[in-house]
Length: 209
Image 1: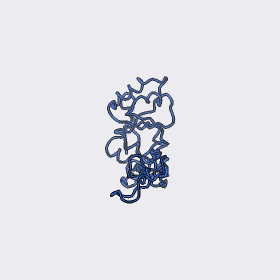
Image 2 (image 1 turned 180 degrees about the horizontal axis):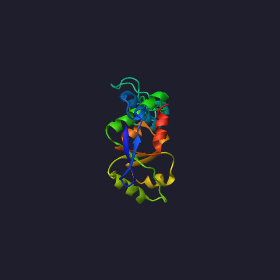
Image 3 (image 1 turned 90 degrees about the vertical axis):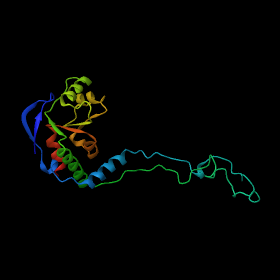
Image 4 (image 1 turned 135 degrees about the horizontal axis):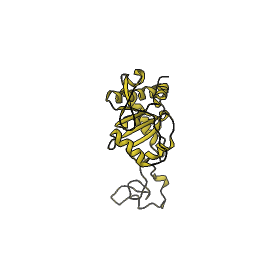
């Protein structure tokens, strides 16, 4: 698949990038995508939720009323879940929500996500760039030139670039990552995926194993 390479001003450079069909042109596997996104979201959960159960409530152990003759149900503890201030029945406990997926499935999911974006014409290849200083307006100018001011965008760099990364941090709708940090969730969560020319080799190398 051939894609025109543009510069940060949105103009064509006259070059074309060759996107591997083995990575950007496969038949998407929806179930692999589902599992990988599910795992990503599960890993974001802290799992620190906790409610006190009956044994953890601090309170009197006195029997609150006599056993018989009241005309109501027996009650032996103020900590009972049926009373206000009592413990909670089967309340949430701290737990780990993460689960394991094998590498081949995760690789298939990322290739499927990239193929979906390629089919939707949502992948743009931009020649490598950097900023001399850390300034938000530098990144603003790039977004305007590429028509991405009001869209969720994902910029994929070949390697870490401090100036570009820090210049983009004020934009909630845009994220800058390296090729090694690419995930199925981040690909699908963006309206446009911007691949820097130098990142293509790393992406294809990581996903063609």
